[in-house]
Image (cartoon, rainbow, N blue to C red; front, top):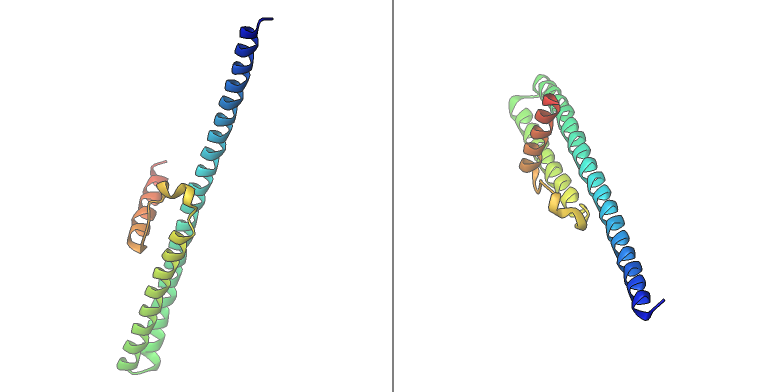
Length: 130
């Protein structure tokens, strides 16, 4: 075996190893990307479900306050509850965006409450079409 044959064999081995490593990394990255994307969409659905339940409880709370207190006190309670819900929305989206894995930020479709609700609406529409 000549030194040229040895060099070709060694180069083929190294290139094969590099190609296998690249393909393995690419497949793992792709799988992780899909996992992060699906998990974030499920989390958005959970947030949407939570907001739906909060809205029902909020409605019942307002009705109970109106029946038990004067209208002015009911309005103050409603404003306090509305503010706490707005704070919760802002904090929830802040934690969601801040903790989204940096390697996959390119697929992040939301950055605030409104964009999250638009993405959630699209998820629900897509779910009905499928």
